[in-house]
Image 1 (cartoon, rainbow, N blue to C red):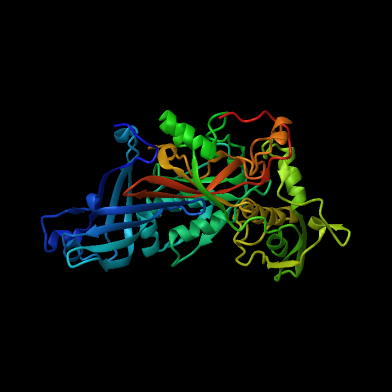
Image 2 (image 1 turned 120 degrees about the horizontal axis):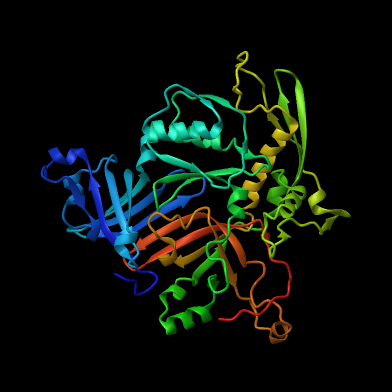
Length: 468
């Protein structure tokens, strides 16, 4: 089977299963097939969620809701693919119903149901808590919890930097496993302050654990001339006329910027220029930390973390207020308790306190990590694209990947163009990190909506004009 347009998809099967069905009204039914009743399926990926969520909308005209008697414990198995190499690329994911969000009759014979789903291991995490404690390096603790409690595989990024977090002792009775894993993950930074993310992918069953700088160092998956995703009516027209579905699949059909360029928010949060005080109430020692985001930007630039062509910071180092550069204005001091050795164990190799650190440098890395998490979304953008290029079995093509997108300039200034300046919008165009993805399979088309972020933009540079 091959795709006729970039929005084509194929539901191989959608089933609702439960042990209760063996003893219910239709005892011979092991599962209810609702494939052809499904109107829309949305699957959500997020870089900070080690599980998927979904919403399913289906029309019941066979009295299934009464016979199934859904209680919010049922398993839902979804097998979906693009129509390009459908059998080879078919992906199967297992969810549990967490809530019936809507049931509404359209007439006497049909009823519309909307149900919210969570990936099965997340459901298991929510109904079971950790029993006992763990002692080890942070990632190894997460790995043990994933394996022992949730039967899931987790992998650290191939080129991930060694992270700075001493061996820990975790005792969290009554706490869901994934909540503990996220709590530990948020404590991890690399030796340069790069924060870690942990997420689940639609394409496989692996949980990934990778730091931000490692993600930014990885080449964009569509790098190279002619592979960019474009917001261009001309491109859509040309691709449609040429009947090239792969080019049609590179067209951005809609976009919007979300809560962007809010410098004041970052200043108030202490993520531009601020002092942080880490106070140990057990010893009375205060550790002051001076944080300047412009220093971190210079560090990223010197180590080639930022793309060479996109070296213009999102931080304003030129505008002045009261004769002082705006990024040099210091916000209110920030205070955090950092008690030490609250549960001291003699000769123990483990740090027994989540908040303590052995030196000021380690405290500063926490502030840097917090800042980078926010700055990557300062120019937050949402784009909608056909799903053709983002669904392949065993290949994570969404979260944590970079994509190159291009926007045309807003005016058609021929004199400007003839001087060999960019034809594209240098602010909106560039390499973006995919932060969150919504896969929408409707009765009409398969499309993805990406939430994108980046740390820098193109400068006002000369380049060759863009050819379509």
